[in-house]
Structure formats: structure tokens, C-alpha cells
Image 1 (spheres, one colour):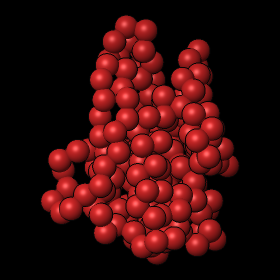
Image 2 (cartoon, helix red, strand yellow):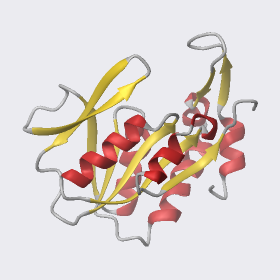
Image 3 (cartoon, helix red, strand yellow):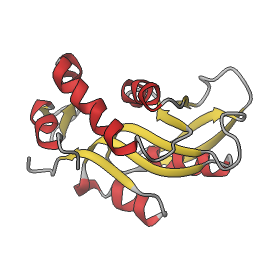
Image 4 (cartoon, helix red, strand yellow):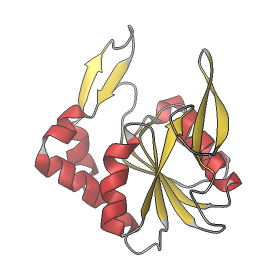
Length: 181
């Protein structure tokens, strides 16, 4: 967890029973609207990764882009979007993952990385871990080395971070929420 983790967690809004009854939605909008909080959020990632020799930040469509782009800028590395299927205009490679009701796919351009590039994978939240794990596998298949997977919020009760670790990838979260918080 980041040194700003408790502060950032306090700025995130919990919306009960959205999008369905029994779900506590963790809304990062107030975090983005508060300039001091947003700066601390980006700084949390910058301080963690500034000395790790990162070649690219691969951010997951779409909320991962919010942190991924300024982070890549601050680290002086490239930014690579990991998009939902059908959103990229050039040759792509893709990875399918399972959702609660069906499957989804993420893609990246086939020329996004060079063999051995050190990649940081970023998204806003880890729930069941499917999207983050698919992106990490896709990057590994493309020849990139996943240095770590990083997120604003981890929901550990849903087991996603554990699944990602069991697949061999490191996980960093700025803050986490349990179901009863």
C-alpha cells in the first residue's frame, strides 16, 4: 500500500447497491475531481516505479488510462493502451478471459513492445482479476516482461489479486476495500 493509501481511500466514494443490489461500487470520480488527491495518487505510483527501469506503462481500457498516461509521462517511458476488442486500428494480438456471464477480449498492437521490454500494467481496480491477468498474459506473449501489475483499488475479498499472484505476477495496490468497508 502507498504512503498515501489511507488518504486516497478516504476520498473514494462507496455507492451501495450499484449497479445491482448487494454491490458496493468503489467510485474513483471524487479522487479525480480533487486535484490534491489526484496528484497524491499519481505520485504514489511514480515514487514506487521511478527507479525500476520501466520501458512502458500498459494501461487497461478505459479507467487505467487515467493513471497510466500521466505515470508514463512522469517515468519518461512509453504509454501502451490495452484495449477492448475491436478498438485498435493496426495489427493486434488478443487474449480472451472469462467474465461472470461469458467472455471478453483485450488487445494490443502487435508492435507495442520489443522483446524483453520491462512493462508495468496499470488499471483502476482489481476485482476478480480477469482483465488484469489477461493483459499481463498478453504482454508476456508479446515478448514483454511484466514488472508488476498496479491498481488504485484492490478488492481482496473477490480474490483477483491472489489469482494474479498465483499466475506469477506481482501486484501493487494503492489501497484496498473489504466487502464490509
